[in-house]
Length: 625
Image (cartoon, rainbow, N blue to C red; front, side, top):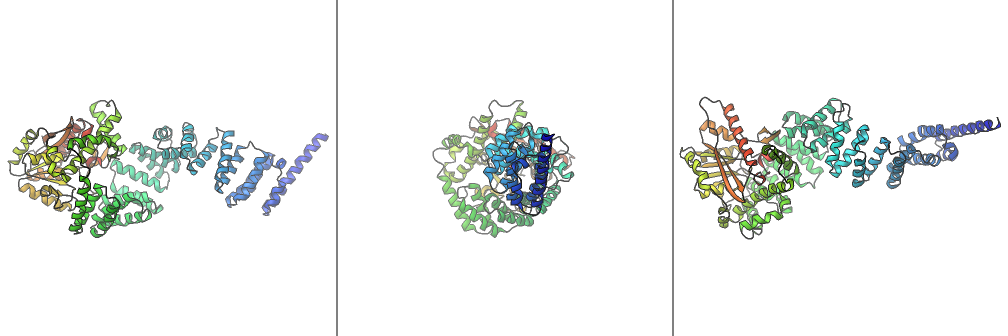
């Protein structure tokens, strides 16, 4: 009985002590309360629960992190194996800026209870916040299989893996999650973003829409839905509505503003696009691509002087970008600054001539050393690989070698342009590599004999710039549409219809005049004179394709041919095929569809001629990311 009485006495003392601790803490006398919270008092489970609930939690809510830390340290001292107290103590110390000590407590909690997914989530969050991306990636990989059972852990795993570029492990988690009907908004956002990175835009769109329908209000969720719709060619009005809703909630999100600006340009709402992109550029003044987009918007809104001022500065900062220099030159021409444009063009040609050493054959051989510089996004390579494999009926043996051949073909066409533009006196070196010109143009001559001119259409594929050269060598009277600026010193200025400094109406007039004069007019009908260029569905994507050529053929009876140069054994050959002609009684929609179908059949034939003939830059490829 005596022993029982002693236990009762100790229990009563502990109850009295904890009552006194809570009373003192309630009066704000924290040091006095802490002095009474001795390890024996704190060791009693009921007492610990009361301290957590009535002292620690209110202190954390009030931001009194030092107070919370002192009481938690006493609880941990009394019970060092309490993973919950270690976890809370670590979180408090992280919030207070004591990151290393806090992370150590969190790691200790995880070691004591490695199967506790809530603790694992906090451990991973600490690694992400500490920007220890390698450790965060490794931790996320360890918990990938179990993370779908805990929403916060799954979300953090996807964040960590995305920052590390580990798409494969991310997809392991996503496969378990995407069919769950009750994803949190934050987790749905991460799942949708992973699906987008994997090119699975339909699934990303479905996840995003479901989350929004269930009340999710994340601006980034609206952005994900809009981006998925952009990739799939969704309705512009709905895309714009998602972006506007996102901007209402995140007016300073630069990525959001950029996407909104691009969409406004597609819808020809150029003045609003200028305002949006100017705001984005102010928020992120170091993003050169954003400034380039603003310059494009200024041009489309006909603010030529402001566009020229902005591009002049960008061109000075990056004198080695031919695309930027050409764009600057055409903008200076639009602003009426012809002498300055001529000076820029002379500088561009001079710099590029310095790189054109040796023969054209030597220059082609050197491309193998610079394949990494080809401007081809990985997503576009993946798309083309999948399409080429399907069309061929099997995958090529070596994916890396296939990718390198694609890159070589892209660089070879750019080299061809540089050679024709900057070394016209040596064009014979290129001409020596062109085979079968006379046979290729025989049908064109017959078409031109009708006196209506001829339209020669092509996709952005193969060595495009060999086409105009071959026609010139064959003596075919011709004009060609290109984005090159119409500078007096440009070697082929007499045959150029420049799309970079004229409006669409002006370009159309020049084409009509050229046809009336009996010229062959070369048009890459998958090009885009503006972000608002028409698009059609192709292989599950929306790609640029203009019905302009089909319209001329239908209304004026202009003969039309598709002409596609291609590489074979590192020499250039030509494929020429007559396009469909208008049939008796055929309505325009039916004719336009037949014309479009014939064009994309030829695109598929070109894909099968080898990866170096894809080009994967501009035209139909531009919208594939």
